[in-house]
Image (cartoon, rainbow, N blue to C red):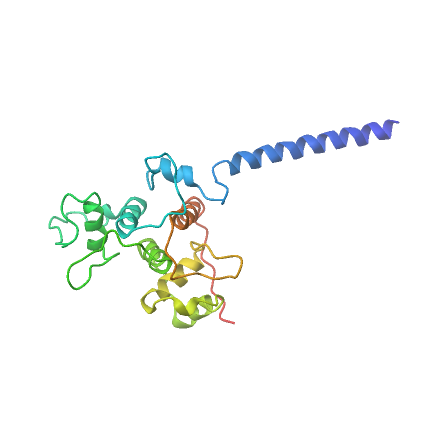
Length: 222
């Protein structure tokens, strides 16, 4: 009888402890959405916003102007080139464009570029390859060798569809765990359009790394 009481008491304590851990886990996870991303925190930080209908619409694609704005806010690009006075002439981005200042900043920081005719194409949708590569460039691309780049990208069957200019930046973004991979087939889908949900994933991972920087491990070559 006494031994049963001890067992019951231990079981109760175990249940209470387990319940406490479950509550703690729920409290920790409450900042993340159904996809494990920190959408509400990102909105509260002003890095992205809801649409006028109050919904976030993670399925909608990002434009170059929207990407420029997110990068400026996330990485403080306005602080990287203090004293810049002369605006660049962008033929398709007038001074009254809603993203004029942010587009100027990404151009001056050489994160995004114009074409030979001086056009930025602010409303053009961004591919996943371009979006993640540009995010990595603003964050800081790792000094990867060609062998390391090939080793990182070789795990993905569609990595051959990554443009040559983006391979180093994409490899860096993958290594930093900033890219959401298609778990069904382990594909990067580099030529698909980048969605707001894709960007939220990158931002969520970036914020997590800011909180727990850790160290960068060595990339195995075999």
